[in-house]
Length: 174
Image (tube, rainbow, N blue to C red):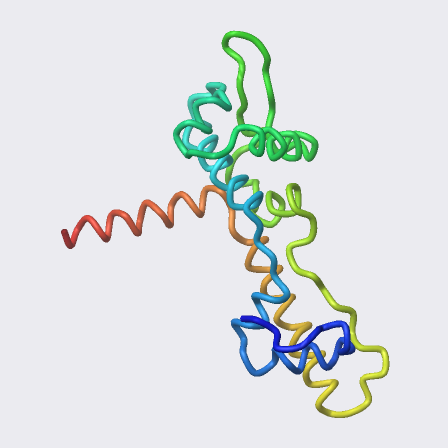
């Protein structure tokens, strides 16, 4: 959704009111899911597949399989490692693995490790005096809380199970 005029000319409540009428527009404006996040989730899901075997997985294998730019993936891996989401081992049998079980790693943590805050949370408008301003501020506050709760409740294990279930259902009808 494109904004018809410059957002610099609006205060926060006016921006919120502009997007209030279109929920999808609100999410697109507030929630930024970058390529880094998508690639980080793909990388972590690849490590999840091999978690039980305790094998190290080479970056080269994942980059080749998923067709992710290697230099870009190196930046993502560094961010994940700095937040202790993955472990690294050098050498011939080196590679990466999850630092803890996949059911203990939520998607919000992964997202925030590589891109920062998931939602651009706007503070409650300090001069929200009218009913409309308060209504919009309350709506956005509840929406952010719901999105935050949703991303925090989704784990790597849950994502894998949901995908497997969807594929199983799809195959049943083929």
